[in-house]
Image 1: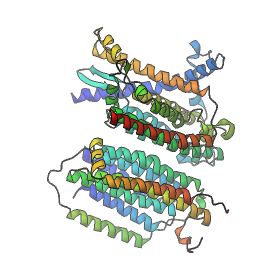
Image 2: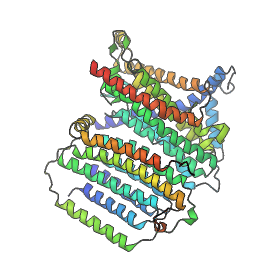
Image 3: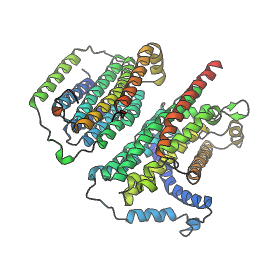
Image 4: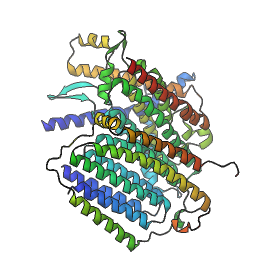
Length: 351
Length: 161
Length: 97
């Protein structure tokens, strides 16, 4: 029995990490085709059908490229930094619920690597560690542009982490849990008879704040000042080439995926369907495993929507100026988040 | 199993603490301290203090240490000019004295035959924090405010310069 | 005697060694941080030893105090470094900047 548990858990870890890692090449394709679509171009369409094999070609290019070291870099930290950027991005997935319970070889378990009862805080804590990769990468490069990029990014990420944490507090107050699994279950009941009790309906302000903060945390446009090409060459990864650069690149896309998955879990009901539809699907008499798979697909569709939003926003908005970014973070986001908590408290107390 | 894990983790903690105090370059010291605090979070997990472990990672390694690393990196230190670390025998002697005194105190603590291992559940901690310890909690928030204002005032550019 | 207490005292002694041995202001502050963290470990160990959660609360407060200490301490170090261009404590011999 313990062996089956071990095997099933290992299988879960393997399959989910496989899914997570393969989102990265897919997203690079979506990004390039999406940007082309938005700008009225065609985009990469030569390698494979619709250019779908382009990421594979890119990957081969990254692996074959020469790994350059410059004499002025701090070699140990220069090598460690990309790994430090990638590890937290992967670790954060351990707490995200991908689907409901399923049964394999007589062992029933949820489609989630670890059901931590403080899952929300866990994901935030692990995500906060991803600063180190960027900070070290910039410092070890021993280059003005790299260092400026990493200094900017660490200040930006710390500032927006505050607003990110505060925006979630309202949700914790409404659903009265910090476990992501219970959060999903609490959201799958109706609200006012018609709407599902999703976070986006109960906490619209928090959703807006959360979503803006995720952009700042992942260093994506309009907040991609750490790598603003026009000022800093390529920011913290100026000196990196080959697979090390690819690791930074992957960590950015994985952070996007983490953010999207967290947003889908906290604000769009996670893997659960809206209340009426859930019963309608169950009426077909599906087996438990098939239902779990359908819920998994449902979750991935929600995540894909958010991922598309990342691409959409990137090719629509111009970049912020650094002081504007800081002003937005400290003088707008944090006060609004605090007011939101206060208002939520009043509503809960009144109800 | 848990015993082996404890010894491995505590070995890691001691090594990283040693590397904090023995590294010539403060950047490496700061990074070792990050590692030390992370390892300590794992020790908290072994003691079933899950919430504290997460808070440690979130606040200590995720925010305070970033500040440290940041300051160390901004002070561009020339590696050749860094002084050699001198092992001062008297400091070692004093530290040994401290350690033996602590050993003595801890050996005097009464042992409870069957300690009730409580998991650091967030709801229980919250209840305790907002009932018995509500005054210290408020005072701490005031302290943080004072520290924040102090740090800003100290590093503000004065108009005379 | 619990092995966690032994570990905490060893770590505390290492912190003391760092404070006494190193002349770099930043490393001294880091050693103080080690001492604080080792006391946190002892508190958590004592808490599970006795079987209540009061130690956990103390550690929460300790972490908040450490945050305040790091903020003010680092601000002071930055000012000292700006004025003296060094962070070796042996060279701070005058009281007026």
